[in-house]
Length: 615
Image (cartoon, rainbow, N blue to C red):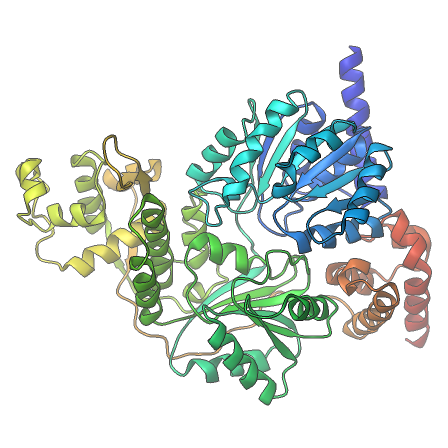
């Protein structure tokens, strides 16, 4: 074995030891080991992992294996503080540099980094751009760089930030240092942009599943929305939740309604004083407030693991935003709910706001993304299947954990209709959008179709007996099922991006008639406003779990940290199920590392022993 191979094997063994002894997990989760190994081998990497999949460990473990300092770039000041606190709870030397600190504090942190006393240093992208940063960092031994929320670098991303585009200079400044780009939300175009703009060299790419099986996706047709919302929240029995609205005024009105019903809640939006917003966020994280009603200004920096539901009272502006915001529920992988209240007027209002923006390629991208979330809301296909196919994870199997699966629409044999659509897409060269394809199908005599000679195709007019809306529904469902892709491309000599429908490999057996296909008839409005609870069996002692939660809250208050930083709900449930009675058994609980064993082990073990004695 070469010395390099021996060194890599040693690092791999160290990574597993760090996972167990520092973070308290008995084994790697899907994708983590491959990503960690690639980094330890010195490779750049692109990591796409759903929220709650253990994304942070992908860079935190290599950081503890390398000898030098790891830089973590994040746009979220509150998340930096949160993660540094959590790392320190696990006995790891970490700190951050951002605009919330005074000059003296920043100087102290820099001195620690130069002296080699830190393993991880979190930074904002703005901080990286300063000349003083490069003067400081040149005195440190930088072994590894992680860039979180990497989708912010792409104009295709839902949260594009111009300051991120300068991060490509990092590779030029640290050519031999492995760089890892991480995000939970990135479609194909965004992923390409990340690799290009960060100058990643032959990166190892891990595209994990976008599926969050513990989250139940439900759409509720708005009838009396405020009453429907109150009914839902009251049914959650004090669980932590976030309710998103599109305006500050609506936030304030809903908080007033919730508080009038005795629900522990508060509002959060950009119009409030910073000090007040920080207090609200602190109280929510520390379980002193159960429900936050907020605009999208809230949540990006929230690492709270026990949020049991996320409600969108208004339609989000994109599937990426919806996915990211709903992903704040159930980070501990316990059952959670994502509820979308919807009325067509919501889409119309967002459309109007978009049309008021100056015409630009960016507006066209926003329009494309708005159309996609509108189609998601109108969908009669399994919600999870729609989400996964949007992100390029082609799946046709229903999830049985969304409103469409639990209360399915009526189906019909749609093979012939699908073949008509797919044949038309193919015959026009897979180079045109929805309206054009429908125009050919319905035999429309518009100028562009005639100029292209597509009125001579054998598919021209095949669907003239059905309405424009009918074919929209068919195409929308074929896109949702992953048989057809809707992509945006920039055409040479054209200022605005152009949408095209293209067939996927899954479409071939349908075109050939080799497999049956059922699609949904137009969906009737739902009369049920009830959101079904999770059917997952809870096989743990609920009385012991409640006592452990109370102990956790007391210990967290004493340490002035959020309760989930002591142990997650998932760890407490495992304790309630396995009832460990000594230090070795307690260390085998997921989420219990050596540092937490020393800090909290005796208190929790004592409570568990007392509970068992009481029978």
